[in-house]
Image (cartoon, rainbow, N blue to C red; front, side):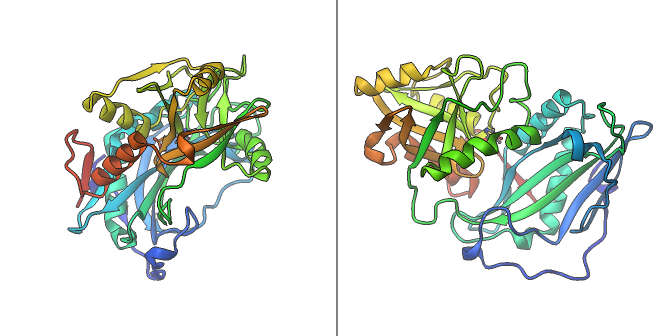
Length: 357
Ligand SMILES: *Cc1c(COP(=O)(O)O)cnc(C)c1O
């Protein structure tokens, strides 16, 4: 299959495109969507771009009952010169297939998946907002559609891509967030589905998020599911700490989601010759560094916020203030460089940008 095999039906009722400066995250969808189907007998087939519309599914579809589904998230940006670009989208397609493997969902052709994203974004390119910090969020996902109440991998699937214009994550400059270390609930355990981008992980995280939100925290910092001591990640971000001049981040251990932004941060730090180490990190290590005055920065990394500095970590009865609640120099440099590359304002020495015609 190539781009030409995707049939296109354009909408006859174009929606009004929202103002760039009034956007939230994930509330508005563009005019078109991509769909293709899978049956065990034929494999993936009938790729098509159609007007954005509701799905018609049997109430017994497996996805509703047992959550056999995976998703991805990336963004399309428009540069000052008007070029449309994606940031490392092949990484998202690779990860989609890793998630598929874990969830017993048939793989997609990664090159074709990327062609589908490009074609859809190109058709709806007027939907890419232009105000600073805004972008068009791309959400590819796969659902299991076979009607069957038995617990077994589905024999039918749909691969769908939708687009959502999203506002600037930081409307008034980057403000460090306060996060609570979660010692009661866990997100994932080794051997579970933590490293797959699959719905159940997020359903499982809602309760903890609800509890800390009442206490004024933006997110939770997840610890490992066995000892409740080793740091995993934050909400939908990976986490980094600067301790005594060195950047540390939890090593991938099977329960952490491997972020594209995480990987990009590590690559940039290496290029800048700033020491960066992936290892097991305990909350005791962090607390010790804090008491010694060596906890210099903490920040999350993810597609939505890019870099999100952490100004305070609440752990049991302690409140660890980091860098006076201000963004640190490394987090700032990473944010400026990554967004510079994404919006085409900075050179792209790694070849991370993929142009959309
Ligand atoms: C998507 C996600 C991330 C960040 O991944 P990016 O590719 O950098 O956006 C981190 N943790 C979780 C749980 C996620 O779902």
